[in-house]
Length: 264
Length: 264
Image (cartoon, rainbow over all chains, first blue to last red; front, side, top):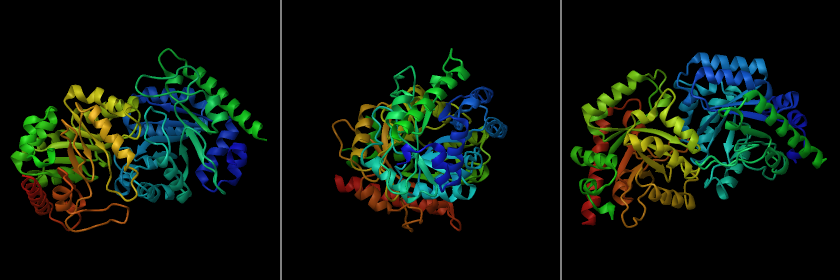
């Protein structure tokens, strides 16, 4: 079972080069924290990434909410990724047919495939979406997460939807390295998916727009997820982002250590 | 049953101002054709919209695939919409939680809510996505389509997923005016949803990336859909877009006339 192994042990055995590098990074930096940086100003996003950079393994962006996006933002974020040793995950939630996502991933103003180590996709369009993204991403050494579940109330990503999504991940595991999910699924022989989980909070439980939050202990130790994704819990008004990020890093790492010790 | 009424009759009774204006436009211009304009150059997109404008009721864009997007593109497209009497539908396929889609719809480089009469969303995140978009769109007189089904092979938008989507549309019918769907669903008292259908073609049946095409007769007359969405069938290499658009306009309108006559 991949859940009982350390990130470092899993890195040694992983066949996808980006997933391997990502697992090594988590082990080296002792963090399974991803910052969800949903800021609308370029300067604020850069400032936040620089402050929080030392504590995270992954910067999750919504590049299309940045009012003053330009290529310099991408250059600065990739420089910060190097400086602080984190990867970048554009949370694009691709959700169209294969032909369209190929263009959305490679082209337009954002050229996501050129700078985002990891991106993600919904499986609602069927497997054509994975094949389209894979055509663009695989030659660039990128990798993909599938949305198998969501943290929002009333999500339709459940039951057969989730099961089919896991089957699609296995079918395309040269490119699909993990899931956005609320819990770890049972491994089949040879599986080692990375589970990233939004809706993680140390303090709050709901936002009134259908979003729900769970404690890192529950998410990582009890439900077996690998990466905690935290946004407003780190940078909401009145919070000190570096201080909060450190709290989440410690809570996430403690929960992970407990999980692999419990299992060994 | 809304399927048996003319677009003009439906316009008279429709409570949503944008849906009403759209149905009036279709009746006045005798077209139920939407152009899916997936071009990556601003100049090419403007040229195509101007050529095809006389034959369409709706220009469907993927604004994020345009390499040289700027505000002038938006200004030119809205001017063409006025010149040729069509509406604009940014096919964004929003697919995130409420808090995120509010930002994606209103902010960033594209400011979709400021120029796109109609947009669309997946229901996989649950109803928070509709509430988030509605917070932004309703005050601007915009409206939303939900993706109840898709035309791509192996889509997970089927069965309970589709049923729940229709229920969500009814719950928020001040903002949700219709569906992306492959067939018309049974009306409940007071329903008048507009059904828009991709994957319509007069000539070809598949693209090798999971996309499948159906004839306008089948889609409009037999399956009861209102708007045919056609892309590559109109502007693929070697085709004369104005000529092809006219063919699709005629085929779509003929199928619609047959439907309302068959029903009366």
